[in-house]
Amino acid sequence: MLSTSIIAITTCICLIISVLVFPKIKIGNKEIHTYWIVCLIGAIFMLIFNSISLKDIYESFTSKSNINPLKILILFFSMTLLSIFLDEVGFFKLLATKAAHLAKKNQIKLFIILYLLTSLLTVFTSNDIVILTFTPFICYFCKNAQIDPKPYLVGEFAAANTWSMMLIIGNPTNIYLATAANIDFISYFKIMALPTLLAGLVQLVIIYLLFRKKLNVAMNTEFEEHISNDKIEIGLGLAHLIICLILLVISSYIKIPMWIISLGCAISLFVIATIISLIHKKGFKHLLLTIKRAPYELIPFVLSMFIIVAAINKQDISRQISALLENGNPIINYGLSSFLAANIMNNIPMSVLFSTLPNMTNDIDNLRATYATIVGSNIGAFLSPIGALAGIMFTQLLSKYKVEYGFKTFIKYGIIVSIPTLIASLLMLFILL
Figure 1 (cartoon, rainbow, N blue to C red):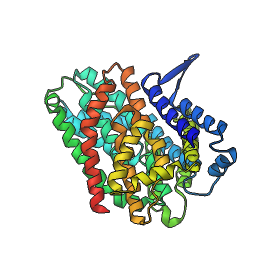
Figure 2 (cartoon, rainbow, N blue to C red):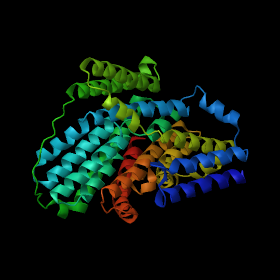
Figure 3 (cartoon, rainbow, N blue to C red):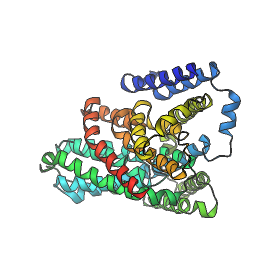
Figure 4 (tube, one colour):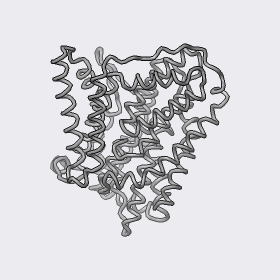
């Protein structure tokens, strides 16, 4: 048990160091993120010290249970591919440019439009893809308009990691925690809709008040509306996304697992897009770039952390952690602890660990703990860059575009925005449950 605890704690510490000190290493002309390498090494040490066996790992990866990590990765990757395809064919850029055009020279209007657009897209696509798409747009636009990008960056990042709570597919942490608790698509939405709505409204007011002086400065720029030449591909991508969402909503009624639905839609999109490309002789640029942009590093990261958590469970450490959280209200205990834990070990491994913790005799308390953890896993993502992979990608993008937004700045705005947002969502959750 001691060796297991030491390996797990050391892995978390090294993960934080890797994110802050050396997020990437360069091998030849290729840059590789270090966060997944740290976790992979931690998983290997768990095997070396017999904290878990290869047989245990094989049984977990081939199990028919809902929390099979391979099924969850398929669901997440399939939805991500749908979002990336829409981005590659210009859908997100088209919407962002239209938003800037509608706002004209009014920063307040632009801020509200971009916040609402980010929120809406996050609900139905992927928070990571929205951040990767809108962050370069905001940096480029604000530089040319000679305005401070911080209000828009804070609004975009906070919105993407708050409105991702609305649907089960909004964040891989939602998928894992809800699946582990046997919560279906509709049941999830019925509970999480109002906490997300209240959190988003509170958050919007706070960010506006925080930056109202900057937003009252007029912009000095002209807008060129982006016209996409890929209307057929945009329609194809949107059609598949809408069909996928509809099927996910009714998945519990038609008795088809969500991972099969999302995988089927992703395959259908690629097959039809390939046929269209062959007919119109347009080449396969969008499809190839979609495949290239998929977050493959997430695979070893999630699987390695799953192995580490499985080792912790086998050594009965998770039961001791669960015992510490059983006293008091589960919404408060799990909401706060998951919020903080996400910024120690990242929200994905935190969710894998916390999915095994609720073990109370009262089923409603287990549900309260699960939903509170979902809230903590999403909102914890914008307390610090360590909270989520999105934070790592976000800070790297800002560094690339030479926007001053260091660790201290991230934490400063993170504390101001995330804590009231967390309180609002947990309060609504407490009322509902």
